[in-house]
Length: 345
Image (cartoon, rainbow, N blue to C red; front, top):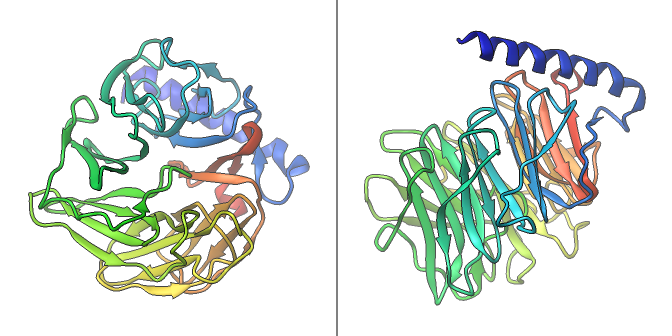
């Protein structure tokens, strides 16, 4: 490890310690508020091993190198009003920022946001990006179907270049089936030989797409979550080995618990219905058994792999990210960023 990286990690740890000490006296419940100079709805979130935090949203893209003590506005000069719905980051210097709607773009920085270059764009008027996800250098980008065809790209070099996938590597979307750009969590990369991309959908139909990296045929597995309306379906997926959990529901009726979660213990081949207590847009594994899910109107935790859920503190949160120190970060409405220390879970 370089001396500069050691200093960065130490500074981030010190800042996190100060934030943790302060929040015990001021936070609503176990969450520690982290002030960010942005009033936007924040849905993009990434936390890196060297202590960097990246957050994005409607007309907002900010980064911190000291655990959230100070922030820098790093919006690309040619896209100051972009809706940066999802982020992927490797450290304090290298990150990807995805613009969900028009212009549908992905930006890459390698100097901490001082400069950006466009590495993927879809100029079609109907293009809408939902999520970008990576496992190491292997990544996937998912967008809503256009003209009845699925829109998925993959990268093998950390997002520097992208290649579109085509049938039979993609399922045919069902009429009215699409993704949700609610938290950047409707797509993930499952490591393996070969790796797989998992994508969850909603709207008229809720399914889990399994896309193998070796060029094999895609699979689309029905999910037992509420579906049938544009506001319903699966919003996020989290995978741990052969175990997986999906959360979602109906964002227009966030109090409805039925059909808001599902779990699998056989690598996504079969799914079982569960209730997360209401609409949830993001979910993370805390360890081999425990999970945390958040949404616009509530949060939930599970201690049995997603089979059952109970209420947890937190409202108005959209996205989640795990830090190297075991803390959980979240972002949400009105520039809200929160940190849940490992000791508070």
